[in-house]
Length: 135
Image 1 (cartoon, rainbow, N blue to C red):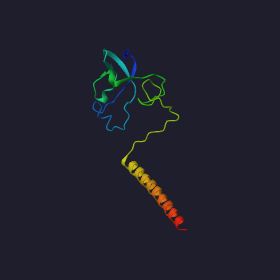
Image 2: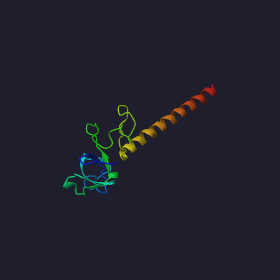
Image 3: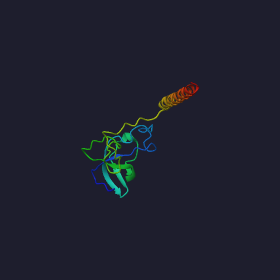
Image 4: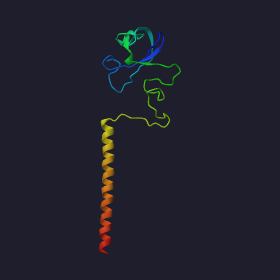
């Protein structure tokens, strides 16, 4: 990927490099687009990143994604039709909710209740079959 002076890019905010901004895996991986100030070489660029981020302004291309002005995406992961992205139709896609312990426990309770209902139904059918043979 070759960028030019003035191009806008997303910065992949890895937890190791941005400890203040990425306290959790569930936080967004991108904050906002930043402008390219200088091309250092084919693999690194100097980015106009504010001082309060507390990191060097030099970034490897692996941590950069081009930003397209007028694009509906506000975050790195939202544009499903971008090359290399998710090809799923965003209108029919289901929202992915993180599985927390409480959601797992709720799911297990529902699953156990469903299994118990199936076993009870099978036992009732078995009992009815035995009664019919006795008559």
